[in-house]
Amino acid sequence: MIILKNAHQLKKMREAGRISQLALLEGGKHVAPGITTEELDHIMHEFIVKAGAKPSFLGYGGFPATACISVNNEVIHGIPDRKHKIQNGDIVSIDVGAIYDGFNGDNAWTFAAGTVSAQAQALMDATRDGLFEGIKAARPGNRVGDIGHAVQTYVEALGYSVVRPFVGHGVGEDMHEEPDVPNYGRVGHGARLVPGMVIAIEPMINQGAKEVQTMPNGWTVTTMDGSLSAHFEHTVAITEDGPVILTAP
Ligand code: MG
Image (tube, rainbow, N blue to C red; front, side, top):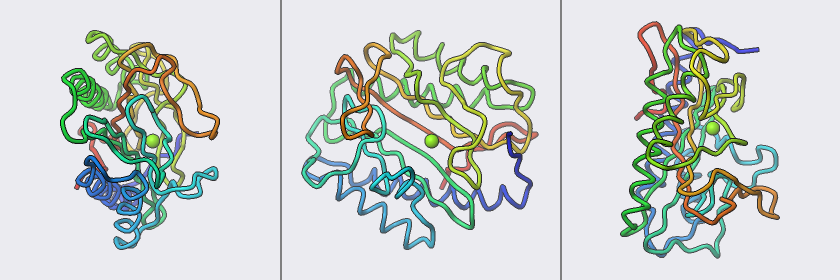
């Protein structure tokens, strides 16, 4: 069942989204050669707690940290590690969420550490722009498939591939609600978008083939061919006036 949110609930979600976005920006500000992924996680943890919110990923399904930090060929669900130092040229995907007043915000961004290759920058740009293509399609009357189609056609035209087994989702009192929001799809297919729906749109885009695998730690997902992957996400409300990004400062 898709749970619609009223104006009062959307106001709370805007605050949860704001804190989530500020935590992500705070983490991103510190992405640089030499910092460890655990240090980045700690910075975001402190930020969320100081804002009076709760890190939503910590303990979720047993996840051991505040943020998922996935570097280079890691797609999602990278576990922060005190032994993992960021290197110059890395691309660092941070996915972080906060619960405030009972509601979730969820967002992700891929940051460049130092100077990255032109190819890495192009992948990041394409994934970010693909996210905004998806957001543009998130308006009443459209369907979930229109969002996926918008993302997919945009990134595939640039020669990239869309990760299939992991998708966006509804967001509310639960971090993962219905519906699933794939980053691929067909125009006019899937659940109809109506005002009051809140969804996380989160393209995970690979430089090479779309296939991914889960590492023995049970969490970290990497590209099968070792190519780079990028991940950008916003929590978006469907309103009469169109999409509104809730994970905004
Ligand atoms: Mg998400």
